Length: 424
Image 1 (cartoon, helix red, strand yellow):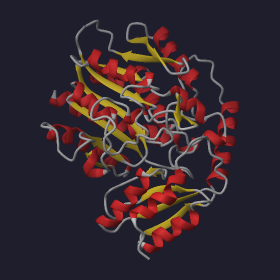
Image 2 (cartoon, one colour; image 1 turned 180 degrees about the horizontal axis):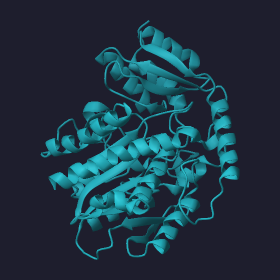
Image 3 (spheres, one colour; image 1 turned 135 degrees about the vertical axis):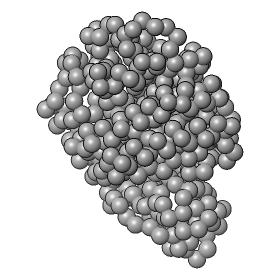
Image 4 (cartoon, helix red, strand yellow; image 1 turned 30 degrees about the vertical axis):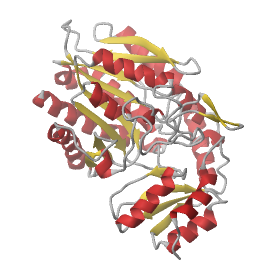
């Protein structure tokens, strides 16, 4: 049975999320396109609101999609009619989320923190705990660590950067700007960024060469409102966006996708103008206070900034501009050299394979993203690192595997930084 794109639009419109979902009975499928037409049709699903929590344009590579009980019959008709290879990877997302929350609460009971000393890799931390941790580092290492308030979220949660130096007092050094926590449900992202901070500060002697001619400016949590919302209970776990309210007719929807909100080819292909969609670009570019903070940081650092690195999950990708077009930047060979170095280091150390390349050639066009804007703002190397997926949901490994994932991520980041130092 051949299904038209028009038919898809009818039944997929129900997938747009206007409020938090009860995920009981929701399923997760892997779908694998075998030809360009199937890949295009799958991409149409994502554009119309189906929640693709992992998407690839590479033939033979799986994309991962959430299917509600109401969508199930028609989804099955679609994949059967288009003869798209698919497999069920989670038969009840709601049950998985409930189990994850039970583990989260248990870990927080077993491993409380006081805001003093090193963080373990045994659990995920709240935004407040993350802020307390970097404040404590600034107190313990005053000659090498500086913490600065750079803004506030929509709900007035503080946004702070931590600048890590070698303490030699030299001004005007080149800068690596690193951030995490763009998308609320990607808990492993800020966890990986915290581990980078730990390695640069607590393990300074081992990594001093990374700080000889470079300062690292790190924003561990871009989207604290969304992140905290995902930790309020099972209904909110899969939230992706910020939390500023927007009207869609008579319906109030919440948040914009901060990684579609940047004013560089804003609201072009790969972004939505529907306030209820997960990829909503916002009513205007930089409508979100959180993306304004990142923008202002980029411009304040651009005279010294060499690399911008943003950590996401998931998919095993190292992506560089452009995201708005299939064209490549002039220095794409430099971008490719840094990305490939990270991928090769990880594969050599752990066997994990990363795909690297420009965003549109590896995935799909997604205009208005921070990596494109970072490159546009003056960072010669601008890369999005999509960490591997794991667990029953994908965005965050179970707590027993956090250490494995963050240490592997650091191997890649360290190798990319070393390559950057060699090149610049």
